[in-house]
Length: 71
Image (cartoon, one colour):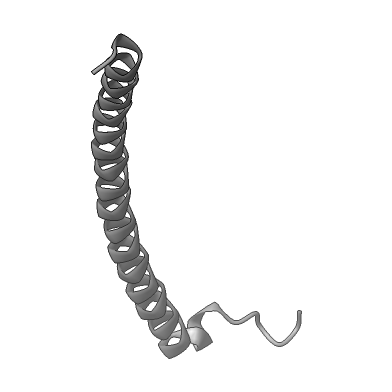
Protein backbone atom coordinates (compact mmCIF):
# COMPACT_ATOMS: atom_id res chain seq x y z
CA UNK A 1 0.00 0.00 0.00
CA UNK A 2 1.10 3.50 -0.60
CA UNK A 3 1.72 5.91 2.22
CA UNK A 4 -1.21 8.04 1.06
CA UNK A 5 -3.64 5.14 1.23
CA UNK A 6 -2.32 4.01 4.61
CA UNK A 7 -2.65 7.56 5.97
CA UNK A 8 -6.24 7.73 4.72
CA UNK A 9 -7.03 4.37 6.37
CA UNK A 10 -5.43 5.51 9.63
CA UNK A 11 -7.47 8.74 9.54
CA UNK A 12 -10.67 6.80 8.96
CA UNK A 13 -9.88 4.42 11.81
CA UNK A 14 -9.22 7.35 14.13
CA UNK A 15 -12.48 9.05 13.13
CA UNK A 16 -14.37 5.80 13.68
CA UNK A 17 -12.86 5.43 17.14
CA UNK A 18 -13.90 8.99 18.04
CA UNK A 19 -17.40 8.38 16.67
CA UNK A 20 -17.73 5.19 18.69
CA UNK A 21 -16.74 7.07 21.83
CA UNK A 22 -19.12 9.92 21.06
CA UNK A 23 -21.96 7.48 20.38
CA UNK A 24 -21.37 5.81 23.75
CA UNK A 25 -21.39 9.21 25.50
CA UNK A 26 -24.62 10.22 23.76
CA UNK A 27 -26.19 6.89 24.64
CA UNK A 28 -25.32 7.49 28.30
CA UNK A 29 -26.90 10.96 28.16
CA UNK A 30 -30.10 9.55 26.65
CA UNK A 31 -30.20 6.78 29.27
CA UNK A 32 -29.74 9.28 32.11
CA UNK A 33 -32.42 11.56 30.67
CA UNK A 34 -34.87 8.67 30.40
CA UNK A 35 -34.28 7.81 34.05
CA UNK A 36 -34.91 11.44 34.98
CA UNK A 37 -38.09 11.56 32.87
CA UNK A 38 -39.37 8.40 34.55
CA UNK A 39 -38.73 9.91 38.00
CA UNK A 40 -40.49 13.14 37.02
CA UNK A 41 -43.49 11.24 35.65
CA UNK A 42 -43.77 9.33 38.92
CA UNK A 43 -43.52 12.56 40.93
CA UNK A 44 -46.20 14.17 38.76
CA UNK A 45 -48.56 11.23 39.23
CA UNK A 46 -47.98 11.36 42.98
CA UNK A 47 -48.76 15.07 43.03
CA UNK A 48 -51.92 14.51 40.96
CA UNK A 49 -53.13 11.99 43.52
CA UNK A 50 -52.33 14.39 46.37
CA UNK A 51 -54.17 17.27 44.68
CA UNK A 52 -57.19 15.08 43.97
CA UNK A 53 -57.18 13.90 47.57
CA UNK A 54 -56.99 17.48 48.85
CA UNK A 55 -59.79 18.56 46.51
CA UNK A 56 -61.99 15.69 47.63
CA UNK A 57 -61.31 16.51 51.26
CA UNK A 58 -62.08 20.19 50.79
CA UNK A 59 -65.30 19.43 48.92
CA UNK A 60 -66.40 17.14 51.71
CA UNK A 61 -65.90 19.86 54.28
CA UNK A 62 -66.83 22.74 51.98
CA UNK A 63 -69.57 24.05 54.26
CA UNK A 64 -66.97 24.82 56.95
CA UNK A 65 -65.17 27.34 54.73
CA UNK A 66 -68.17 29.08 53.23
CA UNK A 67 -68.72 32.74 54.04
CA UNK A 68 -71.63 33.58 56.33
CA UNK A 69 -74.81 34.73 54.55
CA UNK A 70 -74.33 38.39 55.48
CA UNK A 71 -71.23 38.68 53.27
